[in-house]
Image (cartoon, rainbow, N blue to C red; front, top):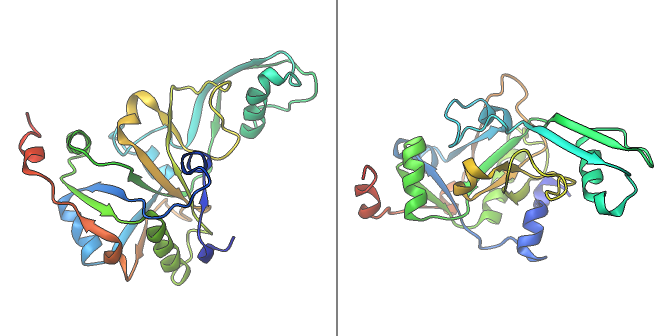
Length: 250
């Protein structure tokens, strides 16, 4: 599909939407109040990459050192043709862990696989008092922007990129982040399609969803600052209740 024709759905999105379309679904960006001007005045968004998030010092909020890799993968398969272990075998093949030939017994211990760097755009699928307070505690965020329609928003991103620098490399894939126990149990977690997984204990509170693109930064892992002429048409600044703010330090 051409970049200007739309975007694809990741495996969780296909399940959640049950064959439906991604339309009139909102998302939310938690941010610092002083950064609102980039959105509202400059009409510019910042698109980061997996590598930039993996290098963040403040792990547990924006930062996650495991964005670029899956560590500690272990598995045992008596027979790769056994239907009972088919998900494990397919996961191993997808991850490029081993040359799985018919009938082979496979033992994998503490294996690490790395992901290719790519541009991603992160949002939250929900908004509530607890989520606001958590982001304020972890990252100091004190403002929220509502993206009124995710589908229209990503199309605006892709049109702006296509008629400007064309750094994204093609159409986006949209998906929810899947929160799992780490390292992932390959008999339970399906990794045969590209998806984003994060540690359940550290990140599940974020209720995150993402767009990702084929390309990553070309040099120095610099973020992509993209000007979108009609950006304000897709946004609404949330009026945060005083009760949420007043209790931040409670």
